[in-house]
Structure formats: structure tokens, C-alpha cells
Image (cartoon, rainbow, N blue to C red; front, top):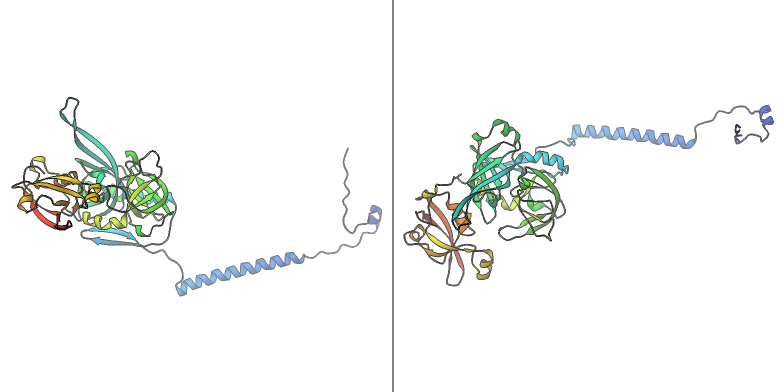
Amino acid sequence: MDHQYTYYTPGQDSNPQNNSEQRPPHKKRGVPKWIKTICLGLIFGVTASAAFQTSNIIAGKFLGTKSEDKDTKRTETVGNAKLTTSTDSSVKSDVADIAGNVMPSVVSITNMSVQQVQSFFGGIQERESQSAGSGIIIGQNDTELLIVSNNHVVEGSDTLTVSFIDEESVEANVKGTDAGKDLAVIAVELDKIKDSTMEKIAVATLGDSEQIQVGEEAIAIGNALGYGQSVTRGIISATGRSIDGIDSSLIQTDAAINPGNSGGALLNAKGEVIGINTAKAAMDAVEGMGYAIPVSEAKDTIENLMNRETRTKVAEDERGYIGIRGEDVSQDISQMYSMPTGVYITESIKGGGAARAGITKGSVITALNGTTVTGMESLQEQLQYYRVGETVTLTIEIPGNDGEYKSQDVEVVLGSGSN
């Protein structure tokens, strides 16, 4: 059964027959006033917008108010090397773009070393060991590409291998290290790098770590677990932190920093290097506590290491020695006895280089050729690059009658023997 609907229109008679017989003449309806008001508003808005845009274009053309992209990087020459520093204040937060731009500046480092270990039968055996780390390309001179990393990434190495963004690998040499600040600069000879690789790599841009704020974005790039470059993201958790073994105030971040990340880049939201990743808190109860050396604080040390002479290890039978016996002065001992950290000289061997230079028992060696000495191991590590007969400068702390130590630089001619 069909339904029928009767539509009532205002103004109609309720009787249908009357409506059919007496239909009023059709009246032309006008546009409602509210629609006219809206249309006028729209016309005014479009006209005003066009006028505003036109005025901006004219002002930009004739008054110079149009914004333009400018080159915001500054290159500094430091000795025979160059550092690139950003002066841009704009912020970019796209992590994928940042990683893509910075990864060509980050390298993987493989450290091959030979360690002496005690065998099951009591003898001494040599065992080859391999460890992984990261580095940041910070400049180049006429003959070398220069890479900053951590001292603990390169120490004890017999062979250092650097792998670039295109996975090409080249051997590198230590240019200089500072064990106290856990910094190192290594060098790769330019003539050993393929042209195709040179086209793909880039020098990192250093930021200003003194301007960072707690809570701002942080991005870490490095060779985590030796698998190759990876990216993690977090925030700046704190600044001014300190940990044992590193003579520097550190940046704390919750961006994941794992073994192999050491020496890699900690970036701000503009893709500038603000820190050199160095350590993580590795306790079971701790999560999200990694540390990086602030690049602004490290800059002077890096520049000093960049301008050192690149040295290679000397054959063991040709190595020079300073002629002392000593003990480590750790940070704990230093605080307990108010002594400088370094190597406490327990004996200056008669006829050795130290004795000939007037260095006596009781002094503390704190640096060799400007590189910090933290103990006997770091002293011996540095001496592997010097031959018998070469002259080095030792920085020593000499105790006074009042218990205070006085710093002095002494030139020592290396002899044969031990230590």
C-alpha cells in the first residue's frame, strides 16, 4: 500500500480545493539580508588579503624586507687545519633529514690490538682483540682527513681502520690523544681515500654546547655494537655532570648510547655536533643515562691534537724510555693525599733520561708533550711512538716544603731500557 504525504506550506489554506481555485500570484523572492552580509564580508576579506600580499611584495622589492636564505657557516683556520662552525639560529627538527645530512660526517672505527694473556699452563700468550667505536670528521689539512674520537676507542691499537658512509675502509694513524679528557684525533691520508668516497663524506658542523638547554632534543649517531651507523633520539637530561676517569663536565642524555657509540656525535635539532658520546651508566637499576663531552669545552684540546705531528708506533726494540719507576696516582688517591693525578715517581733510574734531566723521586708526571698522563699505562701508551734518542717534554709536579705542588716542564732525551 502506497503512503501518501501531505506537505503543508505556510500561507496555504487548509482546504486543498480552495487553494487550487484561488492560487495567489507568484512573488519573486529576494536574497536574504544575512547572505548579502556574508558575501560582502568575503569580498572585503579577499580584497584586503590581495592588497596586503601586494604591499608585502612591493615592500620586499623596494625596501629590502624580503627574507632570504643566507650562508650561516663560518670556517676557521686553526694552524694547518680547518673547523666549520655554524652561526645559524633557526631550528630544524626533522630527525630523518638531520641524520641524512650528518651521517656522511660520522665514521666507524675498528681497533685491532694484541694483548698478552696468561695461558692455562701459566705461560704468556698473545691474543688478538677487536673493538668498535665511532668518530666524527672535523676537518682536513693538506695531506690528511682528521677525525675526532675518544681516547678509549683508539688506545692500545696495533691497527686502526676507519669505515666511511659508503662502507669503504681505510687504515688510520693516531695524531694525538688526551687520556684525561678521553679525546683523540686520528688521521687518514687523503691519497688513500677514493675520489668517490671523498664526494660522499662531509666535515661536521660544530655547534655551541654552552647554549644547550635541559629538555631540548638530542640525537646520537654512532657505530652501536659494531653493526654500523645507527640513530637514536632523546633529550638533554642534564649538563655539568661528572664521572670517574674523565676530566670534563659532561652532557647527560637519554638518547641511547651503547658500546660502539663512543666517539660518535651528539647533535642538536639543527644537526650541529654539541657533544662527543663517551659513556653510559651500565648498572642494572639505571636506564637512559648516557654521557657526552661538550664540544665547546673540548674544542681547545681538539685543535691542539689536530696540529700534532702524526706518528706511527715504533718497533719495540727501537722505543725510547724516560728511565723511571712509578705508581699510578688515581683520582681517589689524588683527593685523599692532595696530589695531582698522573705517575708518582718512586725511583729515577741512574743514567736514565729522567735522572739526567734532574727529575727526582717524589715528583708526579702529569703530561708528555702536552698530552695528559693519567697513570703508567697511559704513559707507556704514548711512549710507543718515540724512538731512543728523541727528546720529549715532560710536565711534572714537584712537591714543595709546604706540601703544595709546583708545575714544571722538563725536556728529557729518551734512552733504552724500560719505562
